[in-house]
Length: 403
Ligand SMILES: *[C@@H]1O[C@H](CO)[C@@H](O)[C@H](O)[C@H]1NC(C)=O
Ligand SMILES: *[C@@H]1O[C@H](CO)[C@@H](O)[C@H](O)[C@H]1NC(C)=O
Ligand SMILES: *[C@@H]1O[C@H](CO)[C@@H](O)[C@H](O)[C@H]1NC(C)=O
Ligand SMILES: *[C@@H]1O[C@H](CO)[C@@H](O)[C@H](O)[C@H]1NC(C)=O
Ligand SMILES: *[C@@H]1O[C@H](CO)[C@@H](O)[C@H](O)[C@H]1NC(C)=O
Ligand SMILES: *[C@@H]1O[C@H](CO)[C@@H](O)[C@H](O)[C@H]1NC(C)=O
Ligand SMILES: *[C@@H]1O[C@H](CO)[C@@H](O)[C@H](O)[C@H]1NC(C)=O
Ligand SMILES: *[C@@H]1O[C@H](CO)[C@@H](O)[C@H](O)[C@H]1NC(C)=O
Ligand SMILES: *[C@@H]1O[C@H](CO)[C@@H](O)[C@H](O)[C@H]1NC(C)=O
Ligand SMILES: *[C@@H]1O[C@H](CO)[C@@H](O)[C@H](O)[C@H]1NC(C)=O
Ligand SMILES: *[C@@H]1O[C@H](CO)[C@@H](O)[C@H](O)[C@H]1NC(C)=O
Ligand SMILES: *[C@@H]1O[C@H](CO)[C@@H](O)[C@H](O)[C@H]1NC(C)=O
Image 1 (tube, rainbow, N blue to C red):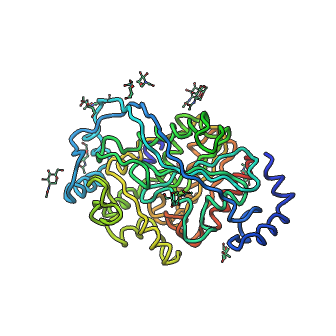
Image 2 (image 1 turned 180 degrees about the vertical axis):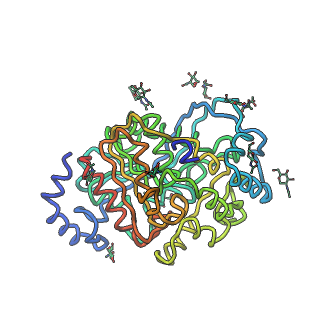
Image 3 (image 1 turned 90 degrees about the horizontal axis):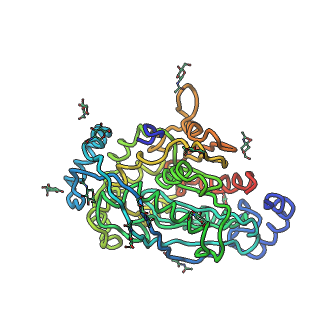
């Protein structure tokens, strides 16, 4: 799986103007926080935009699966069989036949430009993981939890979008054929191509793009650095390592259940093929490290949880690999207690190393490789008390790479 497959000017400006602008921002804006950047936490000017992303890609065929599954027995049976022997499940259910997926996807996103200080020409593209939509990056608990607001406080523009099946983007019906990692990598490539080549987002072409992912969004961002390195100038992979040994533990703990039955009011329109974690306990086990988050943070994450298909869950390890030709800088950011990618202890790597620094093997040509581990933090980093510090760490690292 994940392991098996491989698996400016601004810094100067910030230094010179930092102190005085920080003061101004505080005076002008009650919500700004002394721990964020020089322009304060109210510096993001956001607008929603829906993109049409054409995809024309070759996919392998699933075989012997029910693409329109609709009962829990079937879902749990597939999870059991997959977690017991991933390679067997794949050789049994992924055939050598291929077909072309030629389809245009409707992708809902939000572009936020800094009100002050946005003259660096860098765009940060944010891709969320499983269980969330793009609000992961603008976590509404408090402004300092928002990567979007922290980025703007340092003068960076951001674009974030809802992956298919989440938020306001379209939801494909089937549980295997369309919503899967390979399709989502193609969508990300299409989004990045539009950001670079068209003026659809923010009214200009974006020549410098930093790809930031969380979890499955990092898997996709990593795959882009391997398959089409020209699309990204830097990568920040959060909630991501090359160790997939607890993927089965996560899928089992998740008790994945039909979303329209768990959240009928909110997700009642989703086809039965779309799944969420079965209970608060399932969600906490996979994504949280108790008690290191505000109770309100869990409530918010659970109340906005978004669904996923078996097709996506079972293909997470099928994309990505060594990014031979990626020469930009790479930062890897993890919660020390990540259950999914570190079996709850990111410090316990081979031979006295830590697990996240192993990602370096995917980046032989990167100009910089930095690994950051946040203590007392689980996989769903954004909801933990450490998030304000993590968000600053990401943005100041980007700044430190002269972007
Ligand atoms: C600013 O952030 C710090 C920690 O990051 C937090 O303790 C403090 O309460 C925040 N202040 C405001 C005004 O939000
Ligand atoms: C953008 O969409 C979100 C929900 O998807 C909504 O909460 C927000 O108000 C919208 N923002 C603008 C500026 O329209
Ligand atoms: C779609 O992909 C096929 C197979 O790779 C290729 O032959 C065709 O030219 C592509 N079409 C477009 C419109 O890009
Ligand atoms: C592969 O999948 C496509 C799309 O579902 C289907 O049309 C095609 O018949 C399949 N090919 C084989 C050999 O099963
Ligand atoms: C559940 O669905 C599968 C196919 O998806 C079907 O074969 C099975 O009979 C169904 N089981 C129950 C208990 O409804
Ligand atoms: C997986 O396949 C191998 C080789 O065919 C077989 O020996 C093994 O028993 C299978 N494992 C499971 C859990 O089915
Ligand atoms: C698929 O291709 C692999 C490698 O070429 C081969 O070993 C395997 O037998 C093929 N599987 C089927 C079902 O044809
Ligand atoms: C892809 O779909 C578009 C629109 O439906 C169609 O015009 C085009 O010919 C298709 N391309 C391929 C390679 O099938
Ligand atoms: C962007 O445009 C250039 C020049 O037209 C083209 O070569 C390139 O393939 C396009 N890239 C994407 C990702 O669309
Ligand atoms: C890296 O770039 C070289 C030269 O352009 C090319 O030959 C090679 O196939 C690329 N490697 C990968 C893994 O894309
Ligand atoms: C750990 O160290 C041993 C002895 O030096 C070496 O043989 C082994 O390959 C190392 N393992 C890893 C994963 O680096
Ligand atoms: C990578 O960048 C970080 C942050 O600027 C810096 O501290 C570190 O020394 C750099 N690493 C290397 C190997 O240059």
